[in-house]
Length: 326
Image 1 (cartoon, one colour):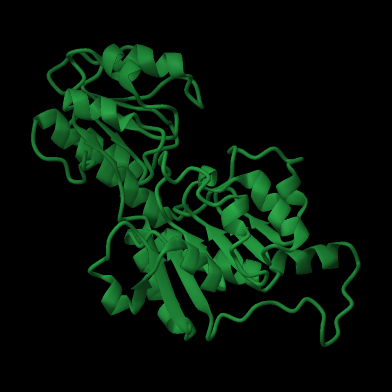
Image 2 (tube, helix red, strand yellow):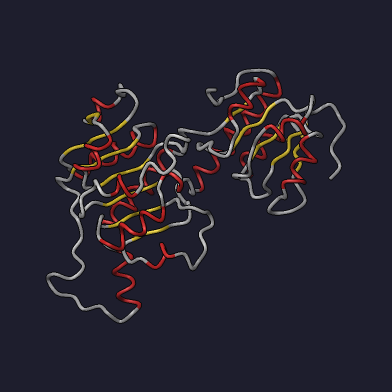
Protein backbone atom coordinates (compact mmCIF):
# COMPACT_ATOMS: atom_id res chain seq x y z
CA UNK A 1 0.00 0.00 0.00
CA UNK A 2 1.35 3.44 -0.97
CA UNK A 3 1.86 5.79 1.94
CA UNK A 4 0.94 9.47 1.56
CA UNK A 5 4.05 11.62 1.28
CA UNK A 6 2.34 14.94 2.06
CA UNK A 7 2.62 17.11 5.13
CA UNK A 8 0.01 15.30 7.26
CA UNK A 9 1.22 12.48 9.49
CA UNK A 10 0.35 8.92 8.53
CA UNK A 11 -1.20 6.45 10.97
CA UNK A 12 -1.37 2.70 10.52
CA UNK A 13 -4.46 0.99 11.95
CA UNK A 14 -3.71 -2.72 12.20
CA UNK A 15 -7.30 -3.99 11.84
CA UNK A 16 -9.74 -2.99 9.09
CA UNK A 17 -12.71 -3.60 11.42
CA UNK A 18 -11.72 -0.82 13.82
CA UNK A 19 -14.81 1.32 14.62
CA UNK A 20 -15.31 4.27 12.29
CA UNK A 21 -15.51 6.73 15.17
CA UNK A 22 -11.86 6.11 15.92
CA UNK A 23 -10.85 6.17 12.26
CA UNK A 24 -12.72 9.43 11.69
CA UNK A 25 -10.99 10.98 14.68
CA UNK A 26 -7.64 10.08 13.16
CA UNK A 27 -8.61 11.41 9.74
CA UNK A 28 -9.16 14.88 11.15
CA UNK A 29 -5.40 15.28 11.54
CA UNK A 30 -3.75 12.37 9.74
CA UNK A 31 -3.88 10.07 6.76
CA UNK A 32 -4.92 6.54 7.71
CA UNK A 33 -3.72 3.30 6.15
CA UNK A 34 -4.53 -0.36 6.79
CA UNK A 35 -2.77 -3.64 5.98
CA UNK A 36 -4.15 -5.27 2.85
CA UNK A 37 -4.93 -8.57 4.55
CA UNK A 38 -7.63 -9.22 7.12
CA UNK A 39 -6.61 -10.36 9.58
CA UNK A 40 -3.29 -8.64 9.00
CA UNK A 41 -0.13 -10.70 8.91
CA UNK A 42 2.69 -9.71 11.23
CA UNK A 43 5.04 -9.18 8.31
CA UNK A 44 2.60 -6.70 6.74
CA UNK A 45 2.37 -4.74 9.96
CA UNK A 46 6.15 -4.72 10.41
CA UNK A 47 6.69 -3.61 6.82
CA UNK A 48 4.30 -0.69 7.21
CA UNK A 49 5.59 0.29 10.66
CA UNK A 50 8.60 2.05 9.14
CA UNK A 51 6.41 4.10 6.79
CA UNK A 52 4.14 5.75 9.36
CA UNK A 53 4.24 8.27 12.18
CA UNK A 54 1.90 6.41 14.51
CA UNK A 55 0.14 3.07 14.95
CA UNK A 56 -3.25 2.19 16.41
CA UNK A 57 -2.57 -1.38 17.53
CA UNK A 58 -5.89 -3.25 17.36
CA UNK A 59 -5.74 -6.88 18.47
CA UNK A 60 -3.44 -9.01 20.57
CA UNK A 61 -0.56 -9.58 18.15
CA UNK A 62 2.70 -9.25 20.16
CA UNK A 63 3.77 -5.62 20.44
CA UNK A 64 7.48 -5.48 21.22
CA UNK A 65 10.91 -4.19 20.34
CA UNK A 66 10.73 -5.75 16.89
CA UNK A 67 7.88 -3.36 16.02
CA UNK A 68 9.81 -0.37 17.37
CA UNK A 69 12.95 -1.40 15.50
CA UNK A 70 11.03 -1.66 12.23
CA UNK A 71 9.33 1.65 12.96
CA UNK A 72 12.68 3.39 13.14
CA UNK A 73 13.08 7.13 13.64
CA UNK A 74 9.84 8.05 11.89
CA UNK A 75 7.51 6.16 14.24
CA UNK A 76 6.54 8.49 17.10
CA UNK A 77 3.64 6.87 19.00
CA UNK A 78 1.61 3.69 19.46
CA UNK A 79 -1.67 3.10 21.27
CA UNK A 80 -3.40 -0.19 21.83
CA UNK A 81 -7.18 -0.47 21.80
CA UNK A 82 -7.31 -2.50 25.00
CA UNK A 83 -7.00 -2.32 28.77
CA UNK A 84 -5.06 -5.59 29.17
CA UNK A 85 -1.43 -5.26 28.10
CA UNK A 86 -0.12 -8.80 28.55
CA UNK A 87 0.80 -8.99 24.84
CA UNK A 88 2.92 -5.82 25.07
CA UNK A 89 6.61 -5.78 26.03
CA UNK A 90 6.10 -2.82 28.34
CA UNK A 91 9.70 -2.99 29.58
CA UNK A 92 10.95 -2.37 26.04
CA UNK A 93 8.77 0.73 25.76
CA UNK A 94 9.96 1.92 29.16
CA UNK A 95 13.63 1.49 28.23
CA UNK A 96 13.18 3.50 25.06
CA UNK A 97 10.82 6.05 26.66
CA UNK A 98 8.53 5.48 23.70
CA UNK A 99 5.00 6.98 23.91
CA UNK A 100 2.52 4.16 24.59
CA UNK A 101 -1.22 4.57 25.08
CA UNK A 102 -4.02 2.19 26.04
CA UNK A 103 -7.76 2.33 26.77
CA UNK A 104 -8.67 1.37 30.34
CA UNK A 105 -11.65 2.68 32.38
CA UNK A 106 -13.91 3.16 29.36
CA UNK A 107 -14.59 -0.59 29.24
CA UNK A 108 -15.20 -1.05 32.98
CA UNK A 109 -19.00 -0.91 32.77
CA UNK A 110 -19.32 -3.33 29.88
CA UNK A 111 -16.94 -5.86 31.43
CA UNK A 112 -18.61 -5.58 34.84
CA UNK A 113 -22.03 -6.19 33.28
CA UNK A 114 -20.66 -9.27 31.54
CA UNK A 115 -19.16 -10.50 34.82
CA UNK A 116 -22.50 -10.20 36.62
CA UNK A 117 -24.16 -12.04 33.75
CA UNK A 118 -21.67 -14.89 34.06
CA UNK A 119 -22.16 -14.95 37.83
CA UNK A 120 -25.89 -15.46 37.43
CA UNK A 121 -25.64 -17.86 34.49
CA UNK A 122 -23.10 -20.12 36.22
CA UNK A 123 -24.65 -19.94 39.68
CA UNK A 124 -28.16 -20.71 38.39
CA UNK A 125 -27.02 -23.44 35.96
CA UNK A 126 -28.33 -21.81 32.78
CA UNK A 127 -26.03 -23.75 30.47
CA UNK A 128 -26.86 -27.05 32.12
CA UNK A 129 -30.56 -26.21 31.86
CA UNK A 130 -30.29 -25.47 28.16
CA UNK A 131 -28.46 -28.77 27.63
CA UNK A 132 -31.34 -30.54 29.36
CA UNK A 133 -33.80 -28.95 26.92
CA UNK A 134 -31.63 -29.84 23.91
CA UNK A 135 -31.39 -33.45 25.09
CA UNK A 136 -35.11 -33.81 25.90
CA UNK A 137 -34.29 -34.19 29.61
CA UNK A 138 -36.49 -31.42 30.99
CA UNK A 139 -37.82 -33.27 34.01
CA UNK A 140 -38.73 -30.47 36.43
CA UNK A 141 -39.49 -31.16 40.08
CA UNK A 142 -38.69 -29.42 43.37
CA UNK A 143 -35.05 -30.57 43.48
CA UNK A 144 -34.22 -30.22 39.79
CA UNK A 145 -31.31 -27.97 38.75
CA UNK A 146 -31.12 -26.02 41.98
CA UNK A 147 -28.57 -23.22 41.86
CA UNK A 148 -26.82 -20.92 44.31
CA UNK A 149 -28.30 -17.76 45.85
CA UNK A 150 -26.65 -14.37 45.50
CA UNK A 151 -28.57 -12.59 48.25
CA UNK A 152 -26.69 -12.98 51.54
CA UNK A 153 -23.66 -14.54 49.84
CA UNK A 154 -20.01 -13.72 50.40
CA UNK A 155 -18.37 -12.39 47.25
CA UNK A 156 -14.62 -12.18 46.73
CA UNK A 157 -12.93 -10.00 44.12
CA UNK A 158 -9.31 -10.81 43.31
CA UNK A 159 -7.97 -7.39 42.32
CA UNK A 160 -10.11 -4.38 43.21
CA UNK A 161 -9.06 -2.20 40.27
CA UNK A 162 -11.40 -0.29 37.99
CA UNK A 163 -13.31 -3.35 36.76
CA UNK A 164 -13.38 -4.93 40.21
CA UNK A 165 -14.77 -1.73 41.73
CA UNK A 166 -17.44 -1.50 39.03
CA UNK A 167 -18.48 -5.09 39.73
CA UNK A 168 -18.69 -4.19 43.42
CA UNK A 169 -21.04 -1.31 42.60
CA UNK A 170 -23.25 -3.64 40.57
CA UNK A 171 -23.40 -6.06 43.51
CA UNK A 172 -24.97 -3.46 45.79
CA UNK A 173 -28.31 -4.20 44.16
CA UNK A 174 -28.11 -7.90 45.03
CA UNK A 175 -28.07 -7.57 48.85
CA UNK A 176 -24.96 -9.69 49.24
CA UNK A 177 -23.81 -10.48 52.76
CA UNK A 178 -20.10 -9.63 52.59
CA UNK A 179 -17.62 -8.30 50.05
CA UNK A 180 -13.96 -9.35 50.27
CA UNK A 181 -11.02 -8.37 48.11
CA UNK A 182 -7.32 -9.06 47.74
CA UNK A 183 -4.54 -6.77 46.66
CA UNK A 184 -1.03 -5.60 47.39
CA UNK A 185 -2.31 -2.74 49.51
CA UNK A 186 -5.63 -1.35 50.78
CA UNK A 187 -7.70 0.48 48.18
CA UNK A 188 -9.01 3.91 49.23
CA UNK A 189 -12.25 3.18 47.35
CA UNK A 190 -12.90 -0.04 49.28
CA UNK A 191 -14.53 1.59 52.31
CA UNK A 192 -17.27 3.24 50.27
CA UNK A 193 -17.88 -0.08 48.54
CA UNK A 194 -18.08 -1.96 51.83
CA UNK A 195 -15.19 -4.19 50.81
CA UNK A 196 -12.77 -5.81 53.25
CA UNK A 197 -9.12 -6.53 52.39
CA UNK A 198 -8.17 -10.12 53.27
CA UNK A 199 -5.41 -12.59 52.36
CA UNK A 200 -6.13 -14.58 49.20
CA UNK A 201 -6.51 -17.87 51.09
CA UNK A 202 -9.20 -16.36 53.29
CA UNK A 203 -11.03 -14.95 50.30
CA UNK A 204 -11.03 -18.33 48.54
CA UNK A 205 -12.16 -20.20 51.66
CA UNK A 206 -14.99 -17.80 52.56
CA UNK A 207 -16.41 -16.72 49.21
CA UNK A 208 -19.49 -18.13 47.52
CA UNK A 209 -18.57 -16.25 44.34
CA UNK A 210 -15.03 -15.39 43.28
CA UNK A 211 -14.32 -12.83 40.56
CA UNK A 212 -10.92 -12.60 38.86
CA UNK A 213 -10.14 -9.07 37.67
CA UNK A 214 -6.35 -8.80 37.95
CA UNK A 215 -4.01 -8.24 34.99
CA UNK A 216 -2.04 -11.19 33.65
CA UNK A 217 1.57 -10.93 34.85
CA UNK A 218 4.29 -13.39 35.77
CA UNK A 219 2.97 -13.20 39.33
CA UNK A 220 -0.66 -13.86 38.44
CA UNK A 221 -0.14 -16.56 35.79
CA UNK A 222 -1.85 -19.74 37.07
CA UNK A 223 -2.71 -17.94 40.30
CA UNK A 224 -5.80 -20.13 40.34
CA UNK A 225 -4.54 -23.71 40.25
CA UNK A 226 -5.14 -27.11 41.77
CA UNK A 227 -4.02 -25.93 45.19
CA UNK A 228 -6.03 -22.70 45.27
CA UNK A 229 -9.14 -24.31 43.79
CA UNK A 230 -9.02 -26.89 46.58
CA UNK A 231 -9.38 -24.07 49.10
CA UNK A 232 -12.74 -22.97 47.63
CA UNK A 233 -16.15 -24.14 48.78
CA UNK A 234 -17.74 -27.01 46.82
CA UNK A 235 -20.69 -24.64 46.33
CA UNK A 236 -18.51 -21.78 45.04
CA UNK A 237 -18.70 -20.19 41.59
CA UNK A 238 -15.58 -18.86 39.86
CA UNK A 239 -15.95 -15.97 37.37
CA UNK A 240 -13.00 -14.93 35.17
CA UNK A 241 -13.23 -11.77 33.06
CA UNK A 242 -9.49 -10.97 33.11
CA UNK A 243 -7.20 -13.32 31.16
CA UNK A 244 -7.40 -17.06 30.62
CA UNK A 245 -3.85 -17.85 31.75
CA UNK A 246 -4.52 -16.54 35.26
CA UNK A 247 -6.28 -19.89 35.69
CA UNK A 248 -4.63 -23.28 35.22
CA UNK A 249 -7.32 -24.51 32.88
CA UNK A 250 -6.53 -28.21 33.28
CA UNK A 251 -6.88 -27.83 37.04
CA UNK A 252 -10.16 -25.96 36.57
CA UNK A 253 -11.58 -28.67 34.32
CA UNK A 254 -10.69 -31.28 36.94
CA UNK A 255 -12.23 -29.17 39.72
CA UNK A 256 -15.48 -28.74 37.79
CA UNK A 257 -15.66 -32.45 36.95
CA UNK A 258 -15.02 -33.75 40.46
CA UNK A 259 -17.10 -31.20 42.34
CA UNK A 260 -14.26 -29.27 43.98
CA UNK A 261 -16.22 -26.14 42.98
CA UNK A 262 -19.81 -25.77 41.83
CA UNK A 263 -19.44 -23.91 38.53
CA UNK A 264 -17.44 -21.40 36.50
CA UNK A 265 -18.38 -18.48 34.29
CA UNK A 266 -15.59 -17.65 31.84
CA UNK A 267 -15.23 -14.82 29.35
CA UNK A 268 -11.56 -15.66 28.88
CA UNK A 269 -9.86 -19.01 28.30
CA UNK A 270 -6.56 -20.43 27.12
CA UNK A 271 -5.90 -20.58 24.26
CA UNK A 272 -8.08 -18.11 22.41
CA UNK A 273 -9.80 -19.07 20.17
CA UNK A 274 -10.57 -22.23 22.11
CA UNK A 275 -10.82 -25.38 19.92
CA UNK A 276 -14.40 -26.58 19.56
CA UNK A 277 -13.43 -30.03 20.90
CA UNK A 278 -11.83 -28.69 24.10
CA UNK A 279 -12.93 -30.62 27.18
CA UNK A 280 -13.93 -27.41 28.96
CA UNK A 281 -16.79 -26.92 26.48
CA UNK A 282 -18.23 -30.34 27.29
CA UNK A 283 -18.75 -29.52 30.96
CA UNK A 284 -22.35 -28.68 31.93
CA UNK A 285 -21.20 -26.49 34.83
CA UNK A 286 -18.93 -24.26 32.73
CA UNK A 287 -20.49 -21.20 31.10
CA UNK A 288 -18.02 -20.10 28.42
CA UNK A 289 -18.31 -17.05 26.18
CA UNK A 290 -15.72 -15.90 23.58
CA UNK A 291 -14.05 -12.87 25.22
CA UNK A 292 -17.04 -10.54 24.84
CA UNK A 293 -16.42 -8.40 27.93
CA UNK A 294 -15.98 -5.07 26.14
CA UNK A 295 -18.05 -6.06 23.10
CA UNK A 296 -20.73 -3.38 23.07
CA UNK A 297 -21.14 -0.81 20.31
CA UNK A 298 -20.60 2.20 22.54
CA UNK A 299 -17.66 0.72 24.42
CA UNK A 300 -15.75 -0.25 21.30
CA UNK A 301 -16.48 3.17 19.75
CA UNK A 302 -15.12 4.86 22.87
CA UNK A 303 -12.04 2.63 22.92
CA UNK A 304 -11.28 3.45 19.28
CA UNK A 305 -11.67 7.19 19.87
CA UNK A 306 -9.39 7.14 22.92
CA UNK A 307 -6.75 5.12 21.06
CA UNK A 308 -6.94 7.62 18.18
CA UNK A 309 -6.50 10.58 20.54
CA UNK A 310 -3.53 8.83 22.13
CA UNK A 311 -1.79 8.32 18.79
CA UNK A 312 -2.41 11.88 17.58
CA UNK A 313 -1.13 13.35 20.84
CA UNK A 314 1.96 11.16 20.77
CA UNK A 315 2.77 12.20 17.20
CA UNK A 316 2.36 15.85 18.20
CA UNK A 317 4.67 15.39 21.18
CA UNK A 318 1.94 16.26 23.69
CA UNK A 319 0.65 14.15 26.63
CA UNK A 320 -1.57 11.28 25.59
CA UNK A 321 -5.22 11.19 26.62
CA UNK A 322 -4.63 7.81 28.28
CA UNK A 323 -0.89 7.00 28.54
CA UNK A 324 0.24 3.63 29.85
CA UNK A 325 1.82 4.30 33.26
CA UNK A 326 5.23 2.71 32.80
